[in-house]
Length: 177
Image (cartoon, rainbow, N blue to C red; front, side, top):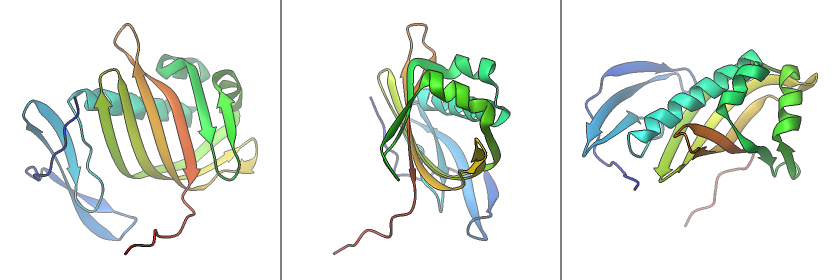
């Protein structure tokens, strides 16, 4: 079951938005048994309270990436994990290759500008717009990326990252009308 919230919750804090030089409001709330997070000027996180668990796992996974912790990161990974790229060219990086590359993946800064998440049964999708300043095996891997992470719940009830689709955000605005 997935839920969508249109009503704005009570604002609980104000954050500085460094990307736009403005302030955005952020809050947390509950409605109909679901928990959610709201950011004006950003994106809304949607779904059931399970989404909080997925987002917590995603944050932990990102911390392990930034720490280049090959042993610690395994607790977040599905055995069939792959990083999938379609731009600038198609590539699939399976788990073993990704883990071998991790010690050479130096993240200097990582900032999430917005996220939307959905949970349905034992599957979760977290779509993010993020800026990363990083080097991979000595080559620059910096820029703004559109990222889709697909999480699966294992038999023990733990969320594990199954796929990451990462695309540089280089396309222009979509024509309308």
